[in-house]
Image (tube, rainbow, N blue to C red):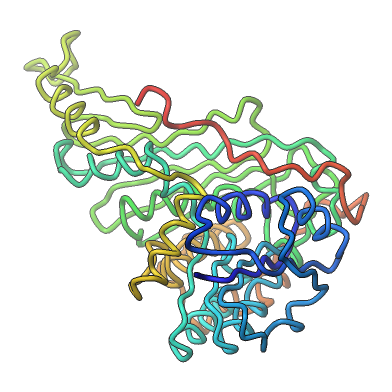
Length: 391
């Protein structure tokens, strides 16, 4: 039985609490921590967590032997500090995305996990969806041949008031805009599927949220050693939030939401009207042969995390995996700010690698024009469109 402390009880904590409650025989939430204790009290009442104690600081429970896991749902700028404290105190850590505010902080978290022997996992809940899980399995079949191009549309929409929350929309507290805090899900997914690129070039802007320092729209291109390209758009200005990943191979195209298309060339190289239905049927069979996941999204990742603790095996998304996503995001920001191509990996001596480096160099598209401590609506955060349609 793993005894869980939820650190930070804002909107995203709903998804974590609901996930743990699915497994009452494997875990119990025993503590709720928030600098606004009334938010923790509300979650305790809402979910009937009668045995959970309320605290205003994670420091109050570091030495509590009755707590096994710190589940961190705070704003990003304190992810590293709390994680390192918890790991050094002998607690396992499941930390919300993004992993940290810098690659240097990621290293500190990974080091604390290694030296303490405790498990560190970073939330990447889109890996725990049928859409991405099955798409990856089809890719691994190599039926579409060499990968040529991927299109990643991380389209979200947030109203103007979204950035009124006191920590959002600032480089110091949130660490970035839509590229870091929304597209991180799709960036993690594409690097999980296609591997790590060698070069990144990008541009960022803010077109619709003049109460935020950070970007609300970015476009990036990743280049791989094979010559393949990924084209990524990150956004919180897209009505409808139509998210997708489309992967073009030499022989066929596949995508999430699931679809497939295999062209046939005429002798002159132009496509004919007929399609390679034999290959398309093989791709469909590969896709459908992958069993549906029993648990998905946060609940699926919590299941994986608890299994890792029970069996003393690595979770699917460990510290190094969490860092890889942040390294790509850091490269996007560096490229946009310097207006140049960024080679990967980023060197540890690079200012953009180090804590505070990005904050010093990042442009302020606007300054915050409003700041509220909390919103009245504290419902669970919507996690985007269902990419499993058509499965």
